[in-house]
Image 1 (cartoon, rainbow over the protein chains, first blue to last red):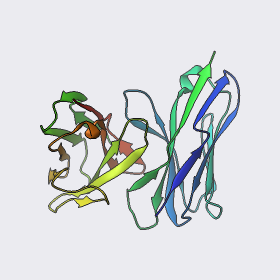
Image 2 (image 1 turned 45 degrees about the vertical axis):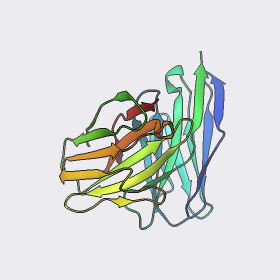
Image 3 (image 1 turned 180 degrees about the horizontal axis):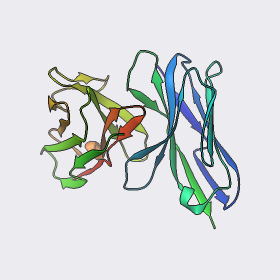
Length: 113
Length: 111
């Protein structure tokens, strides 16, 4: 059974810092990995999706990497802003589980001015 | 892209009653997914809903407790039956496109 773990559980940084969120998964036979953002009272917003054949994806100040063989992904946020404060979730889709995501517990990020 | 609308956005219900959550997608999709997020926890898949067939439930979830309807390719409902306080959660509908899309969720509190 796939298990996804995110470290740290919570992170508080001053504005402007670069930061890294970590995600690990136990079964390397994944189809893809997604990073989501969840804001209180709102649904999930997809930030980046990495296919199993890819090593990284970038969108603006966000960069996500994937090392499938070691079961790890990182989300790098450059020049953090207070608006980045949210819960960040990592989720994987198994190789034969189309559309079924297994989520990590999330990292609660607070960026203070 | 896909836009998902969920109703209601939140509700407070009494123990023993049932609540039906609606999910409407702005495009036709083969599969729709229902997730639960318990307080302080991450998301767990409840079931996959295909149009024209019975939903497929994940381990720990049963049809009698969470009946699902999928009458067409843009709509689905999830009912939380005979509710107890342990059912207090956020319930989210999701569809798979080029990425995974989620509705805003239904925040359910059971007293």
